[in-house]
Image (cartoon, rainbow, N blue to C red; front, side):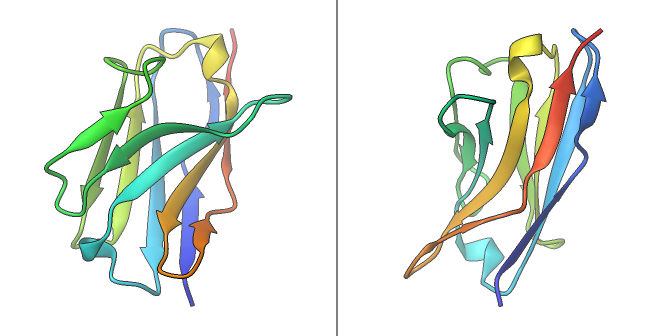
Amino acid sequence: QVQLVESGGGLGQPGGSLRLSCAASGFAFSSNSMSWYRQAPGKERELVARITSDGSATTYADSVKGRFTIARDNAKNTVYLQMNSLKPEDTALYYCYWRGFLRDYWGQGTQVTVSS
C-alpha cells in the first residue's frame, strides 16, 4: 500500500534552518510529481512546493520563494524540503502529498515550530 512518512520537523530558530524528508513507498515514485503542503492552526492547508518526477521543474508558494528548496532522490524514493531563513509564520504541520490515480495520499505530517 502507499505510504508517505515524513521526518525532520521540530523546533527551529528564526533565521535558522530545518530539513524535512518524506520517504515514499507503494507506488512508482520516480514517475510522479510530489508536493509539500502545510497547515497552520486555524488556517487552511496550503501548497508549499511541488517538484516534477525527474526534478527538472519546481514551484513554490510566494511566501517561501527564495527560502525553501524542494528536492528529490529517486534512488531513495525520498523527497526533501530544505527550509532556510525560517520565520515564525512558517510554524505549521507539514505534509508530504502524492496525487494518486484514484485518490490523494497524505503523510501523517511533521510539526515545524519556529520560535526563539
